[in-house]
Image 1 (cartoon, rainbow, N blue to C red):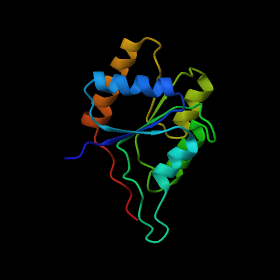
Image 2: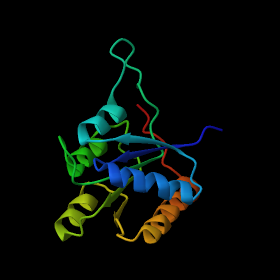
Image 3: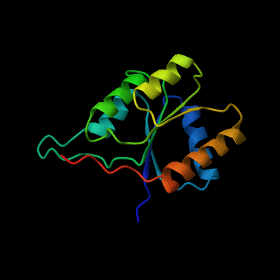
Image 4: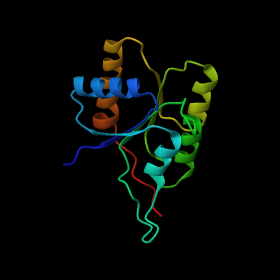
Length: 148
């Protein structure tokens, strides 16, 4: 069985590397696809072949979404994910440094499944990623895609 894909939407190369190391240290072997900005994330999730209309990429099992992104911010990306029928049920975890109450409220209002503030300490970050992987990739039953 092919490992489930995790889409990490993160523009900071240090945070990408930190997330990769935390996944490895947690023995999470899922394929990690990285989108460095909000537009690239939406292109990955929503692009279809112009000739066949078929989806270009396999949908991930989980999206880890930063809020502070170039081109389109995380809230704009989340809004698009939730309004498109193909991705409306996709698990999206906000993984960000922001602890602003407005960011938290807007994330949940737009349909985020979880909001996690990135811990500063690497060991705490590894533990957070380990729990994320265990819950979202193993324990949680993912909703089936909507029927057309």
